[in-house]
Image 1 (cartoon, rainbow, N blue to C red):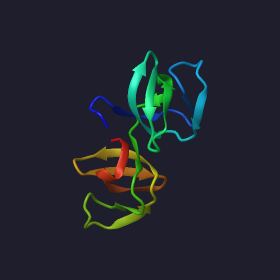
Image 2: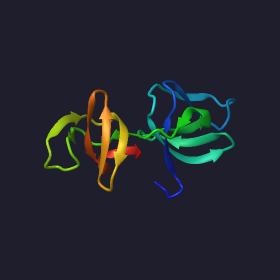
Image 3: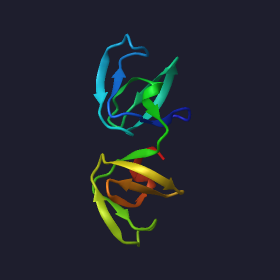
Length: 130
């Protein structure tokens, strides 16, 4: 993505993606996943043009966006480790498209939480706000 693009996440469990930057524009689709990461590509007044992990684009009001760190796994059967090393014990396997809460990141690894599981994942296997 471009240098002036940045990630945010969805603030609520139901967020409308609109065809244009106002409430007058029709809704293209509903998101039903709180903290889903979206890539902000443009802005107009209080709306942000976003792209999601499936390449859907549209406009969302800023009140529906958050800076809570979250990401989606972009590889299937992604191992989560007990420590930030491939030599540590794998604790769980995640499918592609799994939403992860980000606790912290270093240069190559992120500590994540998914439901009742915590562990470390290789950073480049995530898409989102790290």
